[in-house]
Amino acid sequence: MRLSTQYSLFAAGLVGAVVLGVSGVLLISEGRRLRDRAEEERARLLSAANQIAREATETSDDLLLVDTLAHFRQTTPELLGAVYLDQDGRMISPDLPGPARALADLEPGRDASLDAEPVDILDARVLGPRGAEGPLLGTVRLAFSRRAQAARVAHERGQLAAQIGGIAAVVFLIGLAAALAFARFITAPIERLA
Image (tube, rainbow, N blue to C red; front, side, top):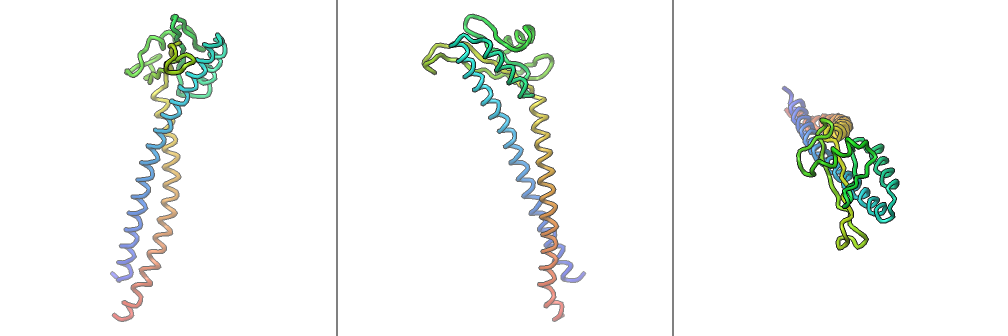
């Protein structure tokens, strides 16, 4: 085997390994970022629901709360249920009474299911006007589908993998061409002497 061919194969293998390693690291870190972003979206939604529940409770505007929770349900596919439970035992929800009661009876932080769908239950305590020192007005409870969230993250990860794969292929081809040219440049004077 010619010396230039050996150097070319070595350089191509090195470029391929580097591109593959960088692509793998990018895919793993971006996958984690996608999961973190989904958790942040849940937390923002719960915080917004909490704020609206406080305003609706202070102004006795149940329609504002129902409308907001219904809007959250329409714009967030992973959100399977939303309910507000006040201190008097009243339940406010855009859902039908049966599913709303089922959600109200679930406990957060435990393995739960709503209509045979595995869900994560998140609660936010709604406090009065003085914030942490104010009286407890009620609780906002949201149920998020684990399957829907996993499917969304998997879909976004697949799109990301396709983009990284395409970029990696282009970088590999450019690196391969550069490796071949460099190998010929380096080995040409050695082959002339031999």
